[in-house]
Image (cartoon, rainbow, N blue to C red; front, side, top):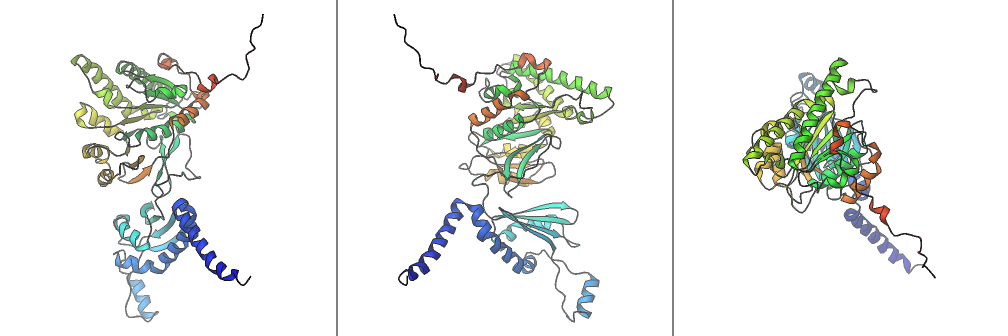
Length: 447
């Protein structure tokens, strides 16, 4: 036993260090929970006041506070006051600190210093979120959560809420159609835009909504989701007819709202409430571009109908998801007007800065430079912005086409029957699983 003691004294620490090194690479959540969180929490506690001071995030104390320090504390010098720490919470991906801002500081001051705070406390990123007037949250991420996307277990849920991707602060990025009814998604080839659409369609397929597809590339992208689609247009002519039907459906629903003297679909009694519809446009440029002058009239009509839907359809439960590789004013008349109605913006890696500016420049100018820095070797990473000026990096979890198709087949019974859209209902291909090899052995015929 005495001969084994030196080996145990050396081997056990080496095995522990090796296990932590393996966990840091292969299981970063485990490493953060065991090592990173306690170390970061302690570093934050010890260096908080000095870090805030050197970062310029302190203010002079009030006269009452200065008077109390000089008279009661018997100290001639009064130190500047940093934001007061209200709460510190540890998570499996980072650390969340709630701060009460003193008079003279605003959330923009904290956000401007987020890069310096990140290096001071040795974390991967620091995001500043205003929770209510006078309070902000420092959401620190201990490691790169976008390297291997793993959606959190606790996700926002609701009637029309779809978790689509993971934010860089470890929270879920969701499409809430009641808050953000229309959205524009841009991205070049191999940027992860199709993966984003698959996750979105797979999430919508589980909800009691009608899905309308417009894929003018002969349906090569959306045709596979036919079991869950209430309508599908695969050519510009079909898209024009389908948009006319959707506008007629919108006007009919407005008549229903007028009859019940309400201004929103969700104020109607449930027994008469129409099913919500989500219109998925795969490549918006195909609706704008024309090859001959005779097609310009059809193009102008389609664009006009799209703009009408974007302006008014939210109240009647019709929502737009517009996707494309390139989006700019050169597409033609009405492009900029359509973009102005699409509140939600998600921009993946693009081939030119002008597309990034068209996607995010009007709502979050600071996010344009972040889009141009997206690496081509990390597909699925995008920048999501909103009309409030905020933005964040997100990444979509990997989902194969077969997995999305399987979900659409599983929830095909939720596809609503809409008489007006019946002519556009796509033919549902047979389930490949039903054509497997027979388990009955044939019996040879005998004389």
